[in-house]
Image (cartoon, rainbow over all chains, first blue to last red; front, side, top):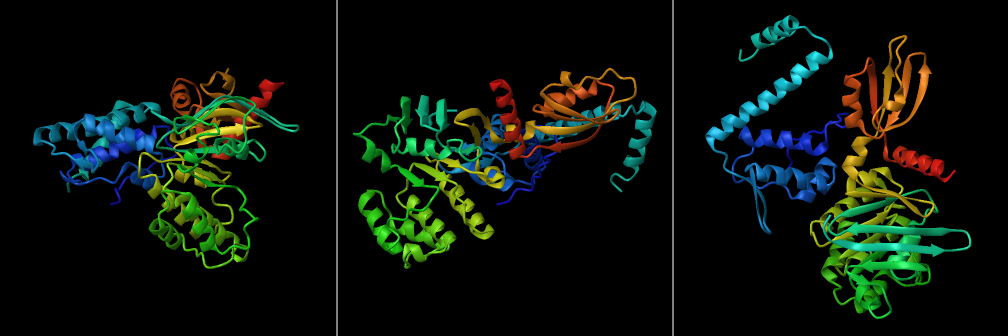
Length: 128
Length: 301
């Protein structure tokens, strides 16, 4: 199985973090359903052209969050994500993105009013 | 890092024209470690020492939890697959399958099915005399032979020399499959940047017989960047204060090109400075090696 995960080499964000965010989103959105077996550590590492150390870290972090579980000797599977925690996780993903948006706005010294305008414009096309 | 497949402890070997070491180095079990360095830096010597062909003048070499000596030589070689840099020539007159038969006699774990499968997935053959084989065909045959006894440790010295791009891809796949078992370890020497990118988990820089560093690959490749920076007129900007600063060039007044070994910290530092980052370029492995060599030579002076 190939996971739709993309890596931005230019970003200074650690690789494990980039992969973690995307894999978490795939699970929470339900794209990867509970019970799905994920590629082996070595396989995913070779697909994404990164090292197994990175993938090990991703799998064990998501396991600690309860999103994955590993059965000894068989593989790593997607866990059942409860509906409430799915909602919670969903907002945390969006909140994190908003955090980044604000950082980006500050970096280019965008005023509050300008930011509001931009968001309003963008929201018009949301859900239509 | 958990267990180690190979441990070198304060190992030194001196020859007329070359000194290797003193080196202390641990190769983790279950991972692929790539040794990267220019020609003549001691890569093949290191391999021969691991194979107990060369003995160090000083220090200890441990392979698969045993210290090398005369008694365990046979026993240990059963567990190692070795692909030397150059194909042997003394057995040139043999046909491929004759050589395979010879190996089958020596290795208790020799598995003929594995051998046949390797030949076919690497698309090579063994019904020719070794000297009649093309370079690529011979390389793939040698790799099949090195892996057919299910070794726990694979030593690959420039594994892809002579392979075309398609054969190269298959070789990478074969090695990935081999590494599916966490009991397996690969130590390889290579010049090829792409090979390191596709295969390695750890990178060791070996230059002039000295280890200049051992790194997790992803972390290393993400840490090194070159930034092109614009600074407003009259600024007191000093590139040397930047985290991970290595070197800089003033391209024209107010424009700097800076090489840095800690992109993450550097980019946070930029935020508090009065400057504009015009572009960022990731350094390739060979450039990172070059930076290491430059630094080592500065220290030597």
